[in-house]
Length: 287
Image (tube, rainbow, N blue to C red):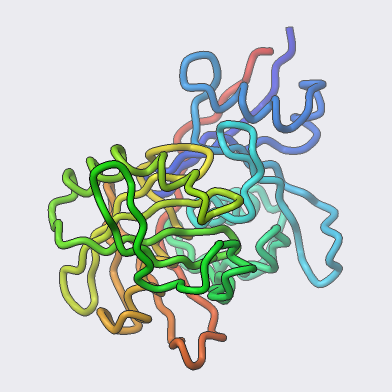
């Protein structure tokens, strides 16, 4: 019997198991298998994803890196809620002793900043609007029509280091948005337009500075929040001239504040995300 120390954290209900690399090594299994095991909600700690700090990033300009896996064992290029939890974890453990630092991810260099005991502001990546880089099998990234089951939707394809399909609806009720995500999310995730699958966001516009969002995450299914999804959704809204540059994004269990000063003509601006990260509990995983 092997005991592995791990921490459970969540950002707006999007939850993660975080284990130091030396603890993970005790498991004597691949990270993919370890992710599947610890994220199982019946036989593990239960989580949307696994995070393992990487103390030796390849990029010398970075202070630290991470390994991030979805609950199904697949690698995710980036996770907005995960990076806030990660930032709080490594700062509180004094692995990094400054409040602003650079993290090497598969989506590039991400820069979190500890604002206070609960909130973290993150300089996310510049959104990718080039179809091949999303990746996306169409030249039309805004309001491209697809048919799924009994519906035809206009979709907006954007990458925040990971692919997103943003669908703007007239439905204001969060539960109705959730029903749409549950009904159509899986089919859109695996649609032929997205060769590496996609996250799927159903959103509605409350006003020029506030939107509602529910999400189907690639590799996880329904989650309570998605940080990169909130970023991609705000970018889609701005590109469609539906919101201003600063937007409050209402998720199932709270809100994120997203800012982007870009446009279709000048998209080369980083997205900034501010929101909470909290501990759930500390535990020993028994293997």
